[in-house]
Image (tube, rainbow, N blue to C red; front, side):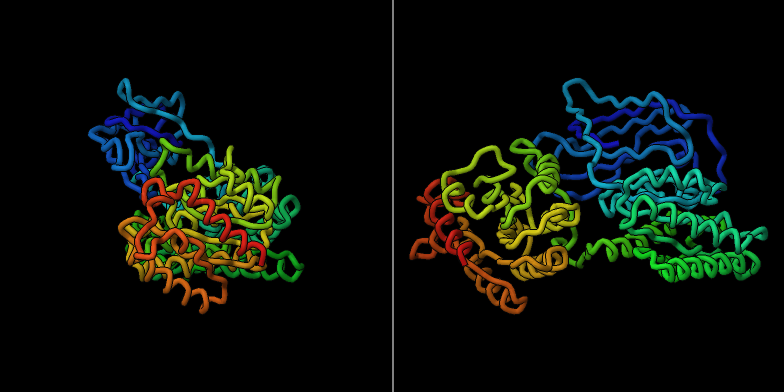
Length: 509
């Protein structure tokens, strides 16, 4: 559950179903809730309850930091529900006068995971530490948990129902409950093949990821257990090879070696503890990023992330939804990716445009991909969350990074831009990419001049175009021409006029 609040205290009350005793799972994980927050820069934070009683469904989170330094409109919270108990009559309360606004369900397709107790979360100490919920946070995506402890048997009726969900990817992690002395290799093979074919009938292009049994950490001393796990993995491999031989494509495998669970990372030899859950989530994240073409780097700006720095000015996530909707109805020839300077200029999905946009850019079918306060890492998130899907632009122009100047070095920004260019090439390989130089900014003039020289050298190495359309906004002294700006950063009407003329020359070629 997602909501925004600036409350110093949040109370969650609900009615849990009767507690279900679960081996190696705490009462908090089975019947409690877990609260996480996202700050304005997109970083996750965990909220420890001052009072948390899972049996009665009463959690109090007090002494919360209600706001960041950017604004007083609160932060996003995500509430993770119990892993085993059902929930009825859930209520969230805040002190009178505090904000409490529910957020809409994300429109992107969910990751659908089918499995047994490991998927359901057995072994975690609290709901947020089930690997599937860790994965949800790390990828910042909806993940549908269809884990059924002791019952993950790939039943035909369940698979048919799952196929009715339009997923980003289907994950089958269901070999744990099948790896035992009654394992029927032929039946397991048929179940795997029928499951994948059933999904493929309705979703011929959706990726399907199957996971090997991760093994048992007590397998050396109880060798039969490991024998069953190894056998089930061989059956899975043979079934996938048969499907590939029948030209059923888009099937991937997460191997036991990639999961790499070690001796002390399971609570009972079969179910991951919290450390093992993190290991599971990391293995799945790496595999899914490879499948989705969503690489991450070591620098902060090479890791996709949302932001909520300007909610008083506009709804960042709402603008993202507008982009996704436009992609289904309008395919522009040119994309202009940027921050508030681009955002405020005009063009869809803006309601109004400045005259210079209509005069110089609109005739070339330019889509405004500017988001106020965005940094390089925020553009990455938007690309990874479908803003370049369903469209085939001829040209992509990029003017991003000025908001990174306060938090990153020139060298870091340059590597962030290089990374962004590579991502754009992989997602839109037929588009001509042009990196625009930074526009002038008060108190940053010397640094920007150096930055633009480095960017120009980088574009030559990456074999893309470079254009410094903002150089006309400098004075001969090298300082910002304040007469062309409202605040030393955002151009005024005259400033946009100069940018428009220069951009038109670029679009003509």
